[in-house]
Length: 164
Image 1 (cartoon, rainbow, N blue to C red):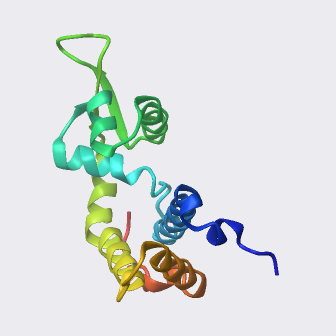
Image 2: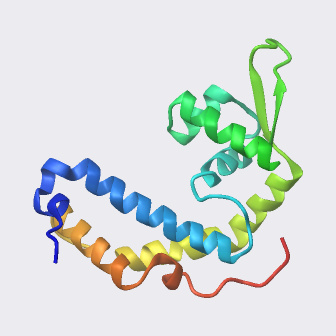
């Protein structure tokens, strides 16, 4: 078996290790979302959640609320516009700025997220992190082993069967 060099190098590769765990959690969450029949990525839900909580925002405000760079937010928002989840209208005070808002499809998707998906994902991550204690690297070892043994989608339980 090949050695997990990232794990073996410990704190030297902490960023890579955290990214790896994050990518795994996001992929597992994508599986939960897909099982519900939605065609949206887990990486896009924070944008919808921000617009739901804060109302319409400029692209810069939305990037800040999600904690990403403006170019990253621009790519994600453009995809959400193409998919019909959000709208972009010129700001009344400055035509160069765009105001991003949830569309009706985006509102319905947030409602499904709040009522069905987010509680399942939260419960699954809580289950994954139960009884973590000790040093961060040991906790990451435990999280990765638990994800390998039981993916987040399996921890989340079966999807509810209601219409989108």
